[in-house]
Length: 157
View 1: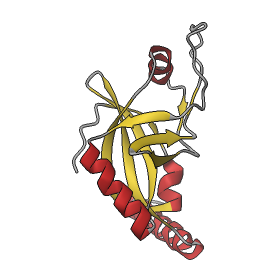
View 2: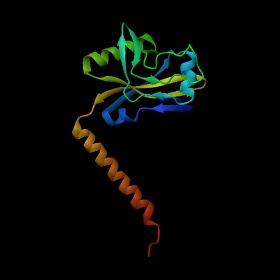
View 3: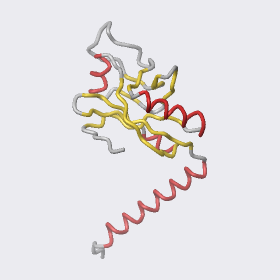
View 4: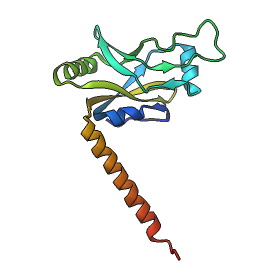
């Protein structure tokens, strides 16, 4: 699914380290005004967050949105559960995959699409320790190849 990302605010780099991302989905987020202002200023953390389907609705849990510094009594709890907005059909499809095949729903990034705040959710499978080692070795190999290609055209005495 091609997602139009105008401005990425935050990404969950740990998700790509801990999980294989099989499919991605786009969801809106139900937020309050001071939360949106805080996200615009970069006060959001997705590191230990995950998604759950509760009573047919999709929620993101563990996402930290810092209190808006210029806010007052309207600031909300930084760790409150935020509701994600998706079509009912998509939520039911995700529910079936998560319960039967052992997938996990993980937030991958938050971005602005026009004036709307969106979240990219990944349908993920967990990585084993040896998978993480293989991915790290492959990344290191690619880095070495890039370095060699970059330095191959330079004259060294």
